[in-house]
Amino acid sequence: MKGFSQLFGGRGIPALSLRTLTLNDDEERLVGQQRAQIRKFAAKNAIKNAFYEGKQKTRQLDIAVPPGLQDLAVSMGWPGTAVDVLEERLDFLGWTSVQDLMGLDDVFRENSLGVEAGRGHLDALITGTDFVTVGRGDTNYGEPDVLVTVESASSATTLRNYRARRSEAGLSQTRNEFGAVEMETLYLPNSTIGFARNERTKKLEVISRDDHNAGRVFMARLVNRDRASDLDGRSEITRPVMYYTDAAIRTMLGMEINREFYTAPSRYALGADPEQFGVNEDSTEAEKRQAGWKAAMGRFNVIPRTEDGLAPTVGEFHPAPPTPYIDQVKMYSQLLSAETGIPSTYLGFFTDNPASADSIRQAEYRLVKRAERRQGTFGQGWREIAYLSLLARDGKVDADAFRKIGVRWRDASTPTRAATADAGQKLVGSGILRPDSPVTYDYMGFSEQDQQRLAEEKRLSMAAELPDLLRKAAGQVSNPQVIDLSSRRNGNEPA
Image (tube, rainbow, N blue to C red; front, side):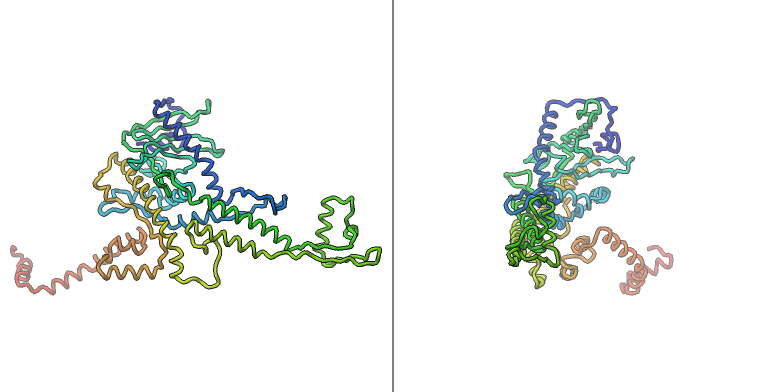
C-alpha cells in the first residue's frame, strides 16, 4: 500500500501528468457522503475551536453595557483549561506485549507518536473525535517506512462499521492557506484513491489508485465520550461550559465598566452654570466630554458663586466596589468545575489555607477517573493503528501474536516520586515485581531510553563480575567427583 506522498508524486505535489481515473457508482456515493459529513460538522467544530482558543464572540444583553464598550475584547480561557488539564494526563507511551512487539516500538519512535498522539487527543477532546491514517512512507524523502499521520476532524471523517468496531471507509482532505481543498484521499478496504484539483477545471479529479487488497481501511478514529445513541463522540466543551464562559465574560465586562467609574467617579454640581465648566449650548460632544474629564480628573475644581451670590453644591456618586462581580465569576467557576470535573483551583480561585495532599487527591479523583476512561476509548483507536501499521508494512498480521499487543499509558494520577518509589519497593520486597523487570521500570516512571541504559549497565556490570564469580564458585566446590574430573582435564586426560 502506498503512502500519501507516493500517491501524489512525492512531498505532496500533485502528479497531474497521470491519466485521470474514474470512480464507480459506490465509490462516488462514499465520497459524496463523507464530504457532506465533513461539511455537516464544520460549523460546530469551528465554534468549539473558537471557545478553546478564547476567540468566541459573546452576545451581550444590551442592558447595562454602553454601546461603545460592547466590542471590548474580554476573553476567558476556561474552555481551554477544561480541555488541557484532561489532555495533560493522557500520555501515550506506545504499545506493549508479553512477547514480541513486532517492530511497533520503531513505528512509535520514527513517527514521534509521543508528541503526535497528544495532538490527536487534544482535537478529539475539543471536537469529540479525531482521525489517524496509516500508510507506507517514502523513504527517499526522509519519511519513515510506516507513516502514521494525525488528521483533524475539520478535514477528515470515516464511515464506521459498528459490528466490526472499525472504519469501512475514510476520507482526508488537504487544504491551502485559504481553506480550499487541494487534495483528497479516499480510504477503502481494498483501495486507496488519490484526488487533486485540476488547475484548468478547478475540480477535484482522481489521479491515482492503489488497489492494495488488504481488506482493511487504513484510517482509524479517536473518539471521545461516545455512547450507544451517539457514536460520533462528544466534545468536552459542552453547552453548559460555553454558557458559563459567556456569562463570566459578560460579568468581566461589567467589572471593566465599573472600574472606569470607580477610578473616576461621577460628580455633580447643584446650582452651577454649565459655562463655569467650559460648556455651552454650542459645544460639540467631544468638547463636552473633554470638559467632563477636566472636571473629574482635575486636582482642584474652582467654581465661582452664581449671580445671586450662592455657592453651588458639589458632590459625587459613590461607585460600588467590584466585589459582587468577583463573587459572580467565582460562582460560575464552581458551576464549570462541577460540569468538567476539574478542581476549582485550576480556574484561578484559591483559599488562604493551602490544601493537604489528601484533599488534593480527593479533589482530583473525578478528573483522574475521567482521564482513565479516555485512555480506554483512545486505546481502542491506537490498537487499531498498531494493526494497520503491521498490515501496511508486512501485508499481513499474525492474529495470535497480535492478541498479545496492548497500549501503554502513563499513570493518570499525580503521585509523588517518593510515594511511587515506596510503593515499588514494597511490591518488589513482597515478590510481586522483579527488581529488573520492565514492568517495574514502567511502574517507577522510567522512560524507554532509561530502561535500555539500565539494562546495558547491568549487562556490563555482570560481565565485569563474571571472572570473580567463577573463581569464587570454583573455590567452593566440595563434590569429589567434580574435583576428580577437573583434575583429569587439567592433566589432559579424557573425561
